Image 1 (cartoon, rainbow, N blue to C red):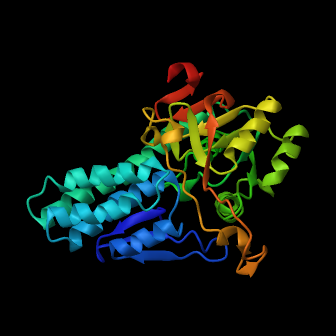
Image 2 (cartoon, one colour):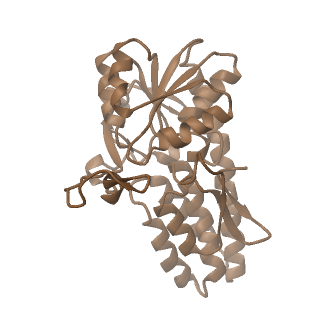
Image 3 (cartoon, rainbow, N blue to C red):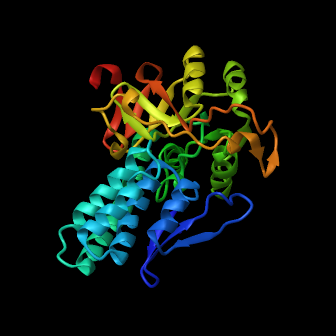
Length: 329
């Protein structure tokens, strides 16, 4: 199934609970907006494009329970702010809400919001396929590609951005192998990216985040491809650790690519104006339910970091590959 979708019979959002992977594959059902917001905050659904669809479907849930346009607008404000860094969440919310507000009754509002939400979900798959088509031309037969976090089908409605580039290249007959960084502290790379790739029988090797410099120096990496949570006027905001990999790739003359839909672009804004989500200290103090650090240690746990365009060889979008972005933006 798609990472996130609407259940017509139950009037609910159904999604793959990503916190349980790879040990368990489970479909979570969100019947209320509160349940969906909780799923977003707990990263049961995550990834910028998937959050865009989640935001849109959340508006539908708000319409089902809302008694007036003001009620619905008040409720979706909570959804819009569930995670502040990825621009796609508010993008999906705003599109579906604007569609809903064209209705004169709550039933009409739900109908219009659902039509828009399903349009957003379908567009995401089509956009990712286009990103894959353009990006696959940057990969050569036999390439080993390093990636960070998860920018695959589970970060989107389907197919993926960074992993979508790899999938498309393989569909075109190119032999591609992947090195996946674990992506501490929540291990989206080890838990989700490796699971996805193994499902598709794509060769993948898991490494610790701190190993990326070593494998690049040893000549084991040909390209780096990551996704993006927001593209701003000076560069890209993505999962924490992205900047580190970009610096190392530049030092070793390895092309560093970002695959992102235009819905992730926010070029009027500086990275300094974007709120970087800080996660709970428990994500670093505990691992797998076990304490691995002193309970009273000071913790800094940002979920994202900023990578300037000068470290990025190109950004791959559904409209093409953009190079020299420092000059273009």
